[in-house]
Image (tube, rainbow, N blue to C red):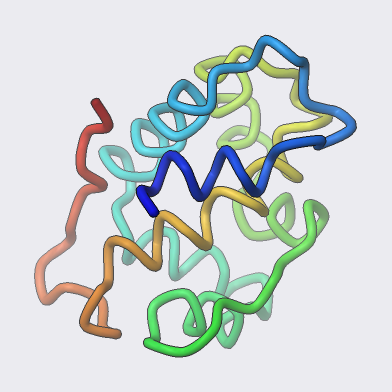
Length: 128
């Protein structure tokens, strides 16, 4: 199953998601905000600072991804990153943390297929 199919399936029926939201737009917005501006190591630091390093580590590792709440994402990323993602994705800042709670585990998992952070700061690949 492709990354977009995974995300679409995970977000289907999401109560706060507008029906016309393009799943590729959500994914691209996350890639733009968290890939180019801070990379995986910066994202890891944010989650570590919020006491969520085990959760983030599960996304990197080869086992099952632990879930995260919108509130935890908000604490790890801060309002500025949430707002930037919301603006790029075309969603409200109120729903953005929960959407990221669904999207980020899958993106990080795909970016770390070997179960480790890359030795150099990686960027998320562009979605097509």
